[in-house]
Amino acid sequence: MTSTDFFNQINTAIQSKLPFVLFSKPESQSVKAYIQTNTETHIIKDYSESGFVFAPFDSEKDSYYIPLDSSVFIDVKQPDFKGCSQSSSLRSIDSTVNHLTLVSKAIDEIKATDLKKVVLSREFKFHLEDSNPLEIFKKLAQNYSSAFTYCWYHPQTGFWLGASPESLLKVEGKMVSTMALAGTQVFKSSDKVEWDSKNIEEHAFVTDYLLEVLSDYLDLIKTSGPNTLKAGELLHLQTLVTGRLKSTDHSLSQLLKAMHPTPAVGGTPRTKALEFIKSQEPYDREFYAGFFGELNIPSESTFRNSKRNIENRAYQTVRKSTQLAVNLRCMQLKDNKAILYSGGGITKDSDPLIECKETEHKIQTIKKVL
Image (cartoon, rainbow, N blue to C red; front, side):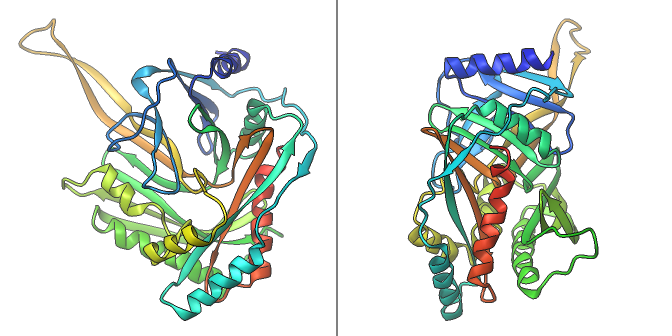
């Protein structure tokens, strides 16, 4: 399939208002898409479903998915992005509450209670003269090949796009991998990078939490890191975690419920941090800091002949693959506006001015393609 044919099919889906997702996984040389064949809304019940999932930050709210068995799958190898249009002019209509005040309030709360870290976010709104989601996706995929880039549309959610640097969960058969990604600074040079105690502590909260949670579900847990990861023009601390699923009755749904939201997007202790976010952030995060990706996709299958009846061919699924990313570096397109989201982890050692600057640096990943 050519790039032109591929994107023509996506345009047809847009015109028909069919749910679809197009995406490119980290370091992939292809772009893939699931296009639903009808406008029916599908809600995740227990994560035994198979398809592409789009889940909100609040795990109590509905997670949508495009089912594998009622969608068309298409892909294009080495897509041609040369036709990407130039960026349109932006007019800021950002009216967010003073983030400095919010961060200061969180620091006071941390010093006065057992809250250790809370991730506070903000939204940046821009008016767009032209908001072609396919052109935006092309530029995301072209500029951020090391990220999980996507463009999602559903009548219930509208358009969301992003380029996430953070893997939430990857399951291949019994093998599981995830990462702790926390701690941020602006990339300045390729010289040796130094990390201050605030960022090291913030990262440790996430790593420790994951290791504690995963010990109930995985054996043979191994870690690698922390190492410095470059994502766009930012640097992050990253620790990779791998393990093997235990032979128990634990479900993928239980594992995801235990993991999400991690302290990288919520805070610690989790319940107290989420209560602070819900009561203090001036907007609903919706799908920002949620997760998305392929869910229970057959990764290898065979047909075998029955020895008793050669005409009876049984389909055997060898294993299934799940690859989910945290919905960071993302935007929502709504009413000729682009709503960009970013946040940062607040600890007792946070500086409100630095935290505000960090959120501004983080939106540049998405803003530069508009």
